[in-house]
Image 1 (cartoon, rainbow, N blue to C red):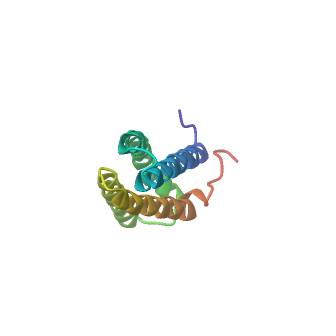
Image 2 (cartoon, rainbow, N blue to C red):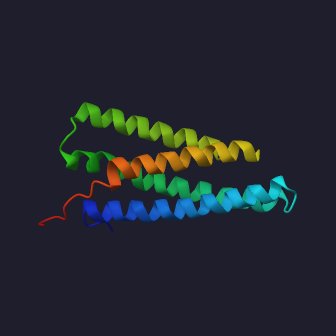
Length: 134
């Protein structure tokens, strides 16, 4: 249960770290597939786990994004709606890419996902909101 905005931001940071670790594992497996060291089945399983974790993260984040942006108090409702819509569209595009079979396509979506997480951290997570009552 999330008690405050800072707790939500902390949970997002943890989820981002888990996603990054899963992405690195997928990338390492893709390297192994590319050089014939392993078959694609293990990579397919790892990508399936990444897809599931990414879907769970997106549900959590998308439920929190609008209220968190609203708490910043610097953006109007129309601007917040646009940011949320753009953000959700990015999630959907990356999720679609995680369905790609070739390792090159997977690598492209992993780069996109890394950039996306870094952008979130610059714009949202780095701006720690004061704890309630602090």
